Image (cartoon, rainbow, N blue to C red):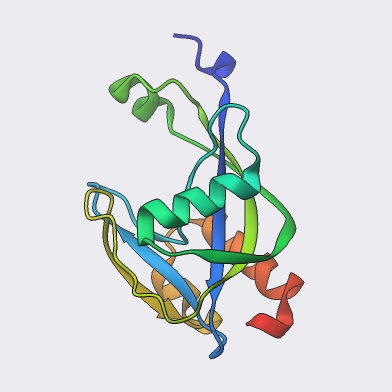
Length: 151
């Protein structure tokens, strides 16, 4: 397997904010995974804004309103061992980031238990306590800078 020739998967993630300047993080129900903002893959020929609306509906059973699409695009790679061990078809992911809010605001969050074990609203000061990877932390800091008024 020539790992260098594997494509990157296109994905989207959303910082869903509330009036208390907090945002939702989710906890993965999958083994050896971690806390992150809600995210998912973009299907072939699917616009990224439609993909994030679909992913949030699937993962949290929420309707959201996109406030803005960030200038940030992130990229991360699987380890070679993980690609070989799991026979992955992608070498990593590239992602687009959205800022959003729950709309209408009084919806009840209902997690997709196959993928998510829980969620929490956190403030930007708590990022280092929840995000384990440098990519997640760096993306968060860029979001806080780009959208200061929301965090």
